Length: 555
Ligand code: ATP
Ligand code: MG
Image (cartoon, rainbow, N blue to C red; front, side, top):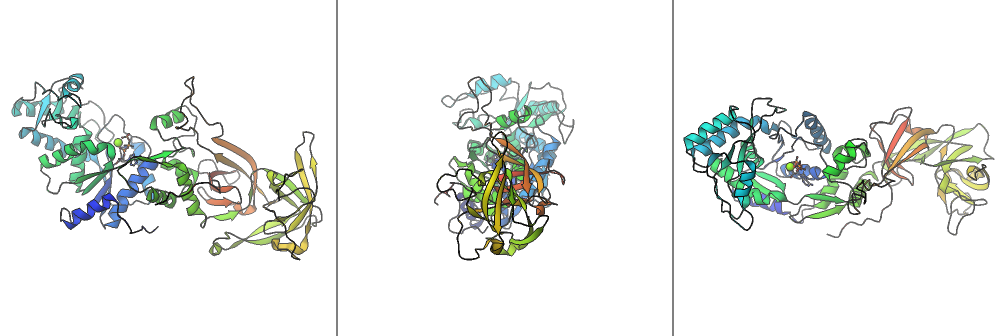
């Protein structure tokens, strides 16, 4: 989608200013995920924002795994994150980096700070450091180790690296200002001892840099110009600037913050999702009810729909949340002209045309997408026995019901006019088959003599129909309505997954592949499930129904 050039967001304005003032002569952005989980729709915003800016300014986009904390990180996540970013279409080219590859440079930077009297080894415990830090109202207290000699700190830092001290016994702290109104500037810890195996560097290191020290260095080493992050890091910016200035990088990066994307009407909290996955309530991190990128892909969302969504959200400094219905709007917009409109009956009942020749079928040519004739036509088999939706027949119709009921004439979509002549029921009162006669002169669904029918229903020929399972989704937890019940159990929506078996699909569905997407007439957009669908047992996920009351917010 072309971006409107009417207004530039605050990040673009800041970049324009930097370029015009010669602060930078190019743009380099990055996406810096921690490989500790699957990416979600919020990350998609950050990816597309950073990649989009690099594209827009003919600059460079880096993918950097921010893997400086060995406790939570796993190689498994590195692979899933790459796959998700690639799928979104953000291309990092040769610019794939790992923060852990910079451990040596970070160590050297710390040594430089110690030598210049700007960092010191501190023996206070974590708890004491917290006490000494002060509060928003009170200034902090200087550590008794703050004025340790440069030589002693240098020696101790080397011995921290050499593994001479147990975890938690010593840290390296920046020497900034214990009375700063910004707590982040009160001699922050920049290195800690942690005897842990790292997924990339193994047992080479037993000291690890803290995020606020590592991140600016990573950006500076890679020549990032604009380091875009979310709002909670705004108060950390003075420290970011302090680090790149004191270490002396020539063209230091600039940090710019924007508000996180929050989605409502869908579960997004990491801990709730983790619980759902761990308790087996959902089918893994890519269960189609979740909003991880993998889940959205499996459900049937497209990269274009997510791009449109992110564009409609815009970037802002103010926290706001966006309704899940907007995401649904975006996938409808994307698919309405791309997907073929096919016949599929979710809750079938037999319809028998008594005056249609027994044992005969015919091929009818139908458009693939009436709104987009370029998608061409296909042949659909028609015959004496069909399936229609149960809800398209009523024994005793209410007023304004124009579909099938005894004595009424309706159009079978693209086929013929038929008049209902009767029906049969089983002992429980369920309709088992419906009978009708057709008018051979109405072929193609066109009136032969100007007479009108009000209802048009879709159908599938019975002898060639393919059996399929269709899964319909709703939100699994409504965070607004409350995640927990009074007894502490999760407040789950019992309709979050409805499985319809023995759905009947037109024969043209034979040969579909995982992720293929279709419009099912009247029933919504559906996607072939990538886990469970097999050639002899098709499984479809409903991406979204056709109608919604969602309106685009006014600009
Ligand atoms: P954690 O809670 O583990 O820190 P995180 O969601 O911040 O998780 P990161 O891997 O640190 O995960 O995030 C990578 C990037 O994605 C960061 O630049 C972060 O600012 C951005 N990001 C994370 N969540 C959102 C969100 N909801 N909206 C926009 N950007 C986000
Ligand atoms: Mg994070």
